[in-house]
Length: 425
Ligand SMILES: *Cc1c(COP(=O)(O)O)cnc(C)c1O
Image 1: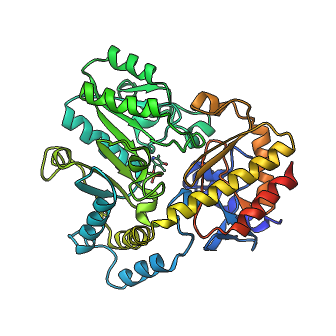
Image 2: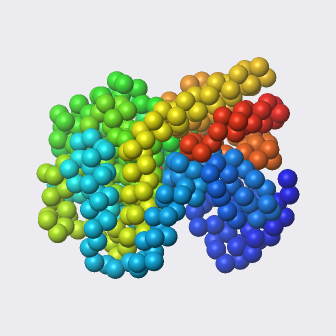
């Protein structure tokens, strides 16, 4: 494939935008080479500025679960735009989306919309602190909750890829209130809670992790966290920015059978427009301004275009829950196909999968936390990534990212993807 125009565009972008990108993981630093620039996309396919076509396995990092430029979502944006793009005054559409989201997700009464997953997570933590009157939080190494200060402590994917897990600019004062535990290590969490008794407001977790590859929580671990939080008066925060409306209507809460205290959303809930949200039972949400004392606001929050895109997306998923089964079946097919090829070729690997999230790791031990994920062979990953790109398959350009399947991907696309793996090794 030729990437001439993309390379020229990247050189130009670097003159005016730091690193040429508006979000670091796009820059291909972990895999080398220049990023491709996208001109347009439709269904399962991306088209770059050199007119190359790719099967897309990132779906804008999750939101486009039904594929690119999906008609109902597209029309929702276009029709709404004709009636004005922002008012800063309430609109009926906000309640419509809120009502639908609350009906789909277990264990929540109210939801507040923001503009990104980052905003959702930082606001949820403020709410948890306000509600409990405590300062500290526990997060897990390798979990990403957006780029807000409190979370940039061993933050998974982007932050890990660039080797700056503790970003300069985050003050010691902020960092000291974030305690770090290892994923799937319940005993470690118990020890932290004991050592900080009565001081912990919240435990925040990706209930199925997707920012250190796809990592599945053990039953004992996730149930244990729930019990511990209930016993100790700690709020359990599920960061469902990736898993929400992807693992099923009710996200990871439903898939794992665990009730969280506050749930954060992003990605799918905005249908490809900038939306985040956080939700909880009434008792907790009533602490939020203007009902309660915890302040949180946003000029473009509940933006009509974004709400209408989200509404179109969630309506489709709500009416066609078989979409989730279809996605899970496709992901299983991909898993089995890649595993067969890698086994045949004698390539050491692990594949993790949950619903429509999947990751391939080039290492020989099970990947259950950040440390085991970091053992993956990055040279093999680079070869794999670029080989696949050259065959017209767009994978996440970092070994620490889960793939996100979209339902526009066909079995023929998956077969082509598996054949591409065969030709590389
Ligand atoms: C993407 C992501 C975020 C951040 O969302 P943005 O919209 O990028 O700010 C937070 N948490 C998780 C689990 C994510 O995957």
